[in-house]
Length: 265
Image (cartoon, rainbow, N blue to C red):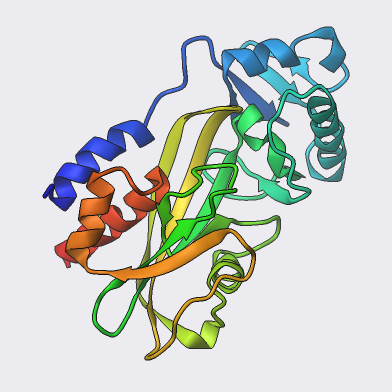
């Protein structure tokens, strides 16, 4: 069986890629916020989008942040959706942030984030039971992304205006049916960055992993239809399934970074 270090070395390579040659930057009011892969850049520099972006020496720029920027990005999202240039539409707003995640610049429809290479934040709950087994969730076979693969107990993107703790509470309730009084945080969160190409464009995601312990006799129960089932497994079984590529890349890294941090303590 591969070790935590060996698995991390293998998977980190897939999760820490550089943008393809020819990629350009997307700036908002002078702040670099996104990475435009060649396909996205070629689409957005066409005459249909002249009223949305200004060309720069490094790529394209949106002139307005705040509410006006949100309106401009909403118009852009609708144009991309109508033109079938993006594969997902969520009717969910996410915060648009600069590369350092320091503050919110504006807001936009979740479905355009990969097309524009905008940064997202994903919060995972990595849960154990009284016996030290890890709770894992099998993704629904109808999920658009990674159907049927194993995942952490819960995980999802932070919506616009949410704190990390609020995302943890919301996602853990929606995906595992757990109230915040049914588990406790047992370690500081682990954070890592994923950068890789995806179908719509470019993924740049800060992943925040909360280690939690479920209270005695608490069993997760999905509420939103996104999970096919749960299972509690020992560390050896967890690592074996990661080695067999049965987990999503993000979930596998969440477990491995948390285990690595635990080993260093």
